[in-house]
Length: 243
Image 1: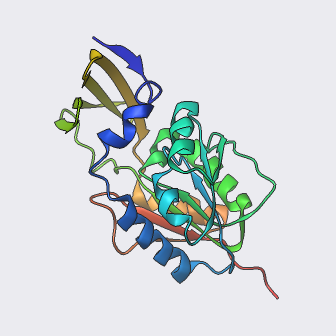
Image 2: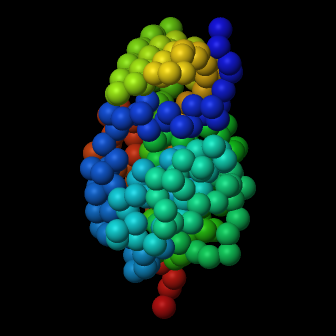
């Protein structure tokens, strides 16, 4: 069994592991959603759980972006990918900033890492505080309890030049939380082969309860009409200030 990691040692391979992901198309759609539903009129954008900054690399053309992530290793890659954007290390549940934003994003199912409804509420409360009146919150949800399949397996491979990566995974459920047990083999020319084990735990949130908490916090909440794959995309609008 290889070394246990939580994106740390894998951060430099992350963009290759997810090379199939179309960040450009997603960024175009996000910009359209912001322009359509956002009511604050500004361009300040915060990407929470920004990872390696790939969405920001496209969104910065239309918005003044800041990226935040809990992983120093991922931020190190993000700063190389996107040179002229500010990145800060912060947990989504506790992030505090003086400035306020017109749009906040939590992409690629990162919201699942909070695991519990109590922590989800705190994240949503935090986002509500960080938004300007009329600002928009867009969240890529993780799978619902009905969508999650315990005992399933998956495999994906990547190769380019002198690097080859194989990833195999197995799904479990523990105390209502989805558990992804994944094993990586990474071979690099001139360096040899390394193996890693990565355990990801994500909360399985029910759609209507998720929306209910958003509304309790103060958002006008809805589901996007077109979701990414089988996953829900939540949109929250902070009510504009009354004249």
